[in-house]
Length: 234
Length: 224
Image (tube, rainbow over all chains, first blue to last red):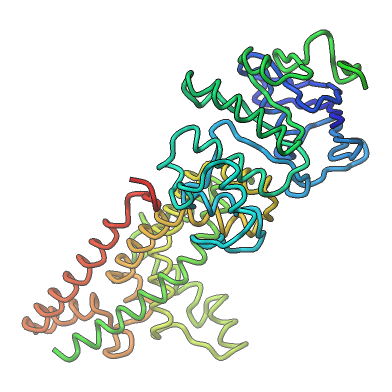
């Protein structure tokens, strides 16, 4: 996957201004954005997903332009075909595991039925070992089960890449290393490019084919909107 | 007691219509207030709250000015469609709908604001359009809060007196609702009728409030 991202956005009130100015390019299958909390990692991820509109810049994946301020291109989030794993997983609390996974399969006005019959959902329930929990609601799941449900929901839409926002931050320490291994295995099985953001060095060690370091809204090593950092062979 | 049942039936009819109108308009306006930033948003919110604090007689007067035969809206309705609203049960519906409106609108706004926008973002990334997100995520998560407010609005509409009397008058069997029938019975010294009416009103209102209380906590399925 060729990631080509350069976004600039000014946010907040005049006295508490936050300047996001991040640019990076990489062709890593597993790219990690690493930096402290509040550095602008989540904002960058949302800009790539189309949930945040940058003031300037561009977002292109494998050469397909998803956003370009100058050319006036802004593909809506729903047409970008990206899987997004929110930090708190954001499972729909009024739907069961099965309904959550089936959520993106039908884009009509009604939610999937409680016992929705779908081979795609069944496959994902099995692949992520969620079969026994299909009829449970999100608040009846453990942290690990929640994460797997969120992954299954994202995978069901057959995204071209997966964006992961601090995927292990909401979990207990002992569970983290187990789920890191799971996610690595899953990424390889689905051969899915991932962009993961984290403040945890252990995530970098486990996932990074390539790394972009972020601090205070900037990609460090002097990378800016005007002169994007090039890391790794392109 | 036969007039009492007629009055109860009329009260229920007026309150149901008024609540139905409030539900549709209140949910739409509550959603706009919760999700959109536009100039005058808080001013609009305050104006929409007015029916809660203004004396019902003042509201009734405003309504007469607007939908009365010489009012700008009432005059147009009469010329264009031959519709009279004053001294009709439809007029009573309008009065009750306006008095009860803040209950639906306020609770809908609060319910929508309590829905974490991240749920909507998650639905967006999964490929849903705005209307589908509203029907499948936002409304189901806000539904209980809206329903509780709607039942309060129904109770308020059922008890409406002042504005209704001014707009629709007190025509037995036509516009004389329970609360107005009580007033008339007491004025006429019909104590038996008044007792029956008061009891009937109280029982109906307690039933509605019990229902509202059961639905009030923002509980969603699967949450304990």
